[in-house]
Image 1: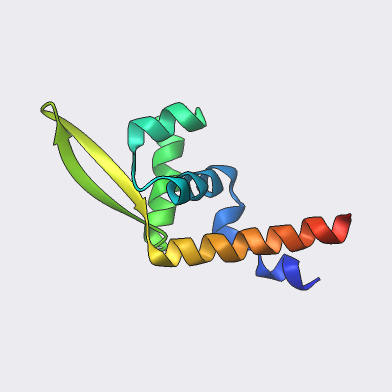
Image 2 (image 1 turned 120 degrees about the vertical axis):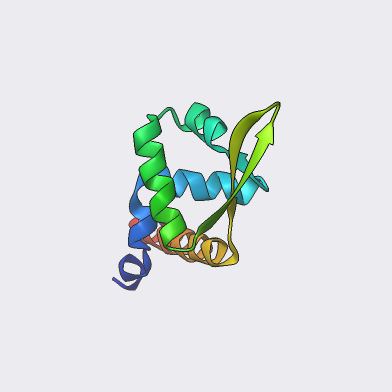
Length: 98
């Protein structure tokens, strides 16, 4: 099945997929906002964000808000393309199942 081979192994993890989907909808999101939205631990979220960053799918910027450090994440163009390919493969798989 061709669509199955087109799935991106990096985006097969639910947290990594959710991060990319959220970033596709919003320009940037902070670590704490991801943690709230995804209901995951700091360690799990950090590991998944690091994996996405290593693959070049997300980038980050560090800033201070009210004297507190904040890390903002954004989807890169490579990440956007990978997400679109992955979602299209998922659509094809779902369509084949119908």
